[in-house]
Image (cartoon, rainbow over all chains, first blue to last red; front, side, top):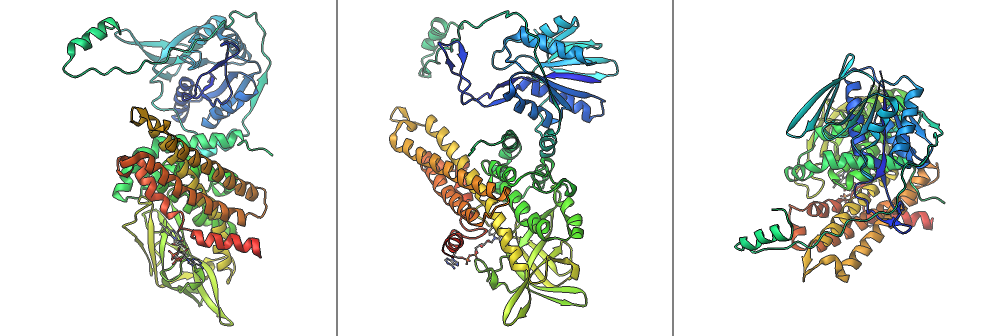
Length: 247
Length: 381
Ligand SMILES: Cc1cc2nc3c(=O)[nH]c(=O)nc-3n(C[C@H](O)[C@H](O)[C@H](O)COP(=O)(O)OP(=O)(O)OC[C@H]3O[C@@H](n4cnc5c(N)ncnc54)[C@H](O)[C@@H]3O)c2cc1C
């Protein structure tokens, strides 16, 4: 069985986010990049299934310029078998999805795994768009995942409960919280063997820009914390009602 | 000139950092309080592939360069010195002499097991009357009928007595040549009759690292347990210490980095006179000094590693790095305690443990004074 796992190259969660060029571009200087946390959970689960005996070949893929190879190497160090990099800056979800769908068509993959959303632009669109390009099923925000024979069993949180889904192949699944308990830490052998694992570089299919970024706004700084004396419940209620507008 | 770490070094750094934060940090305080060595964490470090990192794959290693190993020690020490000590001592002092001086049979027998995390190896040089002056060794080994008979004792031996301490390389006087002591290095396995391993308790620092006394009472081992050549003992031990200096340096650097991070965080959170204390210039300048020392230490240590990885002479730089990193670990930890005020003196705060743990670094594997002797000798010779 073959899985195609999309690996996002995203700023470390502790990064200070700044914008340049009149707030139209993300300032990438001084940013450390990591594997997207949801993709990391997704990959971890697939590796666990593999360890448990599932015959699974895992290809990790990224749409990105050369710098993103370090992120792909981490995925290879964790245990993925090989990698594909589409040599282009990831313009938007439509562009990325198109490229991933193209990779999928190149080989006999059985399913695609993405993260529920990237933790930088948080669009959460890529999984659905890939499925649309390929005309296959898509299941988003999955919190439990298993493969038994010709079906995949998935579970996801929905309003007021859980949904259990069973799907045949192929499909696109996006991993959310719970997909694996903790991301796998690669071991030194994995890191050293990642040196020799293959990263295939393919050129992108250029498509017309669907979106362009007009401007980024950073959220207003968090206002200072207001302290209310323990015996002044009325004031607390008034502020929650009139200022915070939560009750 | 290029100061960038390679992508692979960055990956190793982040990986060991994740491991240290996830596996070591939650246990460090408790193990320290109990003075308890952790077999479990040792095994996990083995699973991660940290033991024998720099050995060829055929011995169970990862074929890494020295810098990768040093980064791993640094990242562990950033979180906990005891675990970093277990790793550094085993790799540099335990595995080192066997790998560099062992014959094929010895390497094939010992190295694979020593890479797993299920077996640690010790380096027995120091004796009650032979510390800085290792030639003061009294432990004696007599060769007779194809066997060495060893008598004597060793003290302060890291990884010497836990349940996974499988033996030691021991420096012993093997004879007298024209009134001068002849030293040899001999391998002694756990369980050999006459060999006793006793844990030492009551340490102020590295409380979760295993420190031992080793006793040899008519302890007999086969002649082929000789490591390297007869009479090569001092050379083996001293070159092992050259390598060990890099990893003790890494312990100082990692500890200082951890202390600096704690001080930065605390100074931004702690408010006095209505402002975070980081806004007071006295605190900010202290942090500037601490960060400058950490940066300088890292450059010196990494350069020494680069020299070794390039096959160049590195003894002077290794001594400088050991000396400087351990001295700045002391001052940076002290500054970090000062920034924490009274809380820095309480066990609830990790900086209290760091302040104690740094104190070994200016003493173990050659005191700061001895490093200065080595450095001065290399300059003045
Ligand atoms: C926790 C711990 C772990 C250790 N692990 C190991 C291990 O695994 N294997 C091992 O073999 N040893 C180990 N040691 C021993 C360590 O290497 C020695 O403690 C160290 O070499 C110093 O020896 P000493 O304690 O006998 O001090 P001494 O040599 O007695 O030194 C006392 C003081 O005199 C100074 N001094 C001595 N000679 C000179 C001189 N010529 N000029 C100027 N000053 C001098 C020293 O710098 C020091 O300040 C360990 C020690 C500790 C505490």
